[in-house]
Each structure stands twice: as structure tokens, then as C-alpha cells.
Length: 181
Image (cartoon, rainbow, N blue to C red; front, side, top):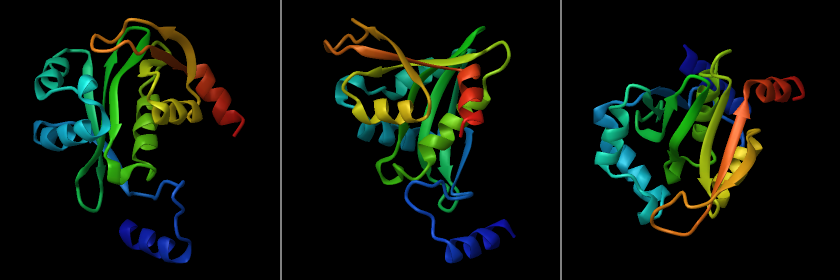
């Protein structure tokens, strides 16, 4: 029924590239079977020196506080993107996030970030993470979603001299942004 309604909606009013098409993606837990697609997205998204290996993913996901999720395209059930975060006492730390090249600017990244925002609580009041200073697409994406650059972190990366830009978004900022939209 929902698929029929969405098909009718699409025929009446095509979705622009900047809008999230209803039910195009769903976010679910990452499972072992997703790893080949996750690694493919990882390789396309990051330079060699920043890529995680399968062992890196498995090492992080074995931590009690780490959670991996994927955005799955509903029609094909293919992994369109993924993110891994750690839930700490006072904050959520985003460890990595990437969207496959064919699904960029289609809403998968925005949907994953919205899911991450929904994980904040009265106790875990913010989301924080680092973005490489040269990753202009990520810097613009997260700034557009309301995240604020709060610091420049030097010496974060072992393989290069790039700095990291520390980003944060608090629950109060989320509420303020929702209220003023």
C-alpha cells in the first residue's frame, strides 16, 4: 500500500535531487553480511591513508559501546551508506560515516545523521566527531545540518600532516534549529 502511494506521489510531483524521497532508504543495524558493501563504500569514499580495513571495522565493532548502522536502499536492499558511533556517558562520538558514490545527494547521508541525532538523550546531550580539514564535502554537509566547528585538532592523523576539525551538535542546538525552520 505504501509503495503504491509513494509511486503515485512520485508521478504527481517528482522529487528534486535535494529532497529525501519517502521510503527510498531505511537505516538498520549493520550485520556481518554487509561488510563487503561497507568496504566497497569505504574504499570509494576515503584516500588510502584514511581507509579502515575489515579488521579495523571488526575491532571497533567488538567494543561494547560501538554501534554500526547502514542505510539500505529499499528497492534493491543494497547498502547505500554506513556509520559507526560510540555511545559515551555524556556524548555520542561519530567514528566514521560514508555514502556510496551512486547515492550521494539522494538523502541517505541526511537520513543517517537524523538517526544519529535521535540517539541523543537528556544524559547524552551532544554528538561530536572529527573531519579532515581537506574533506570539503563533509565540512559543508555537516555545517548545513547544524553542526558547529568547535576546534582544530592537530596531530590526529598518523599518516599525514592534515589537521582535523572537531564538530559538535548539542540537543539544545537541535531544538533551536527545529524551532526556527
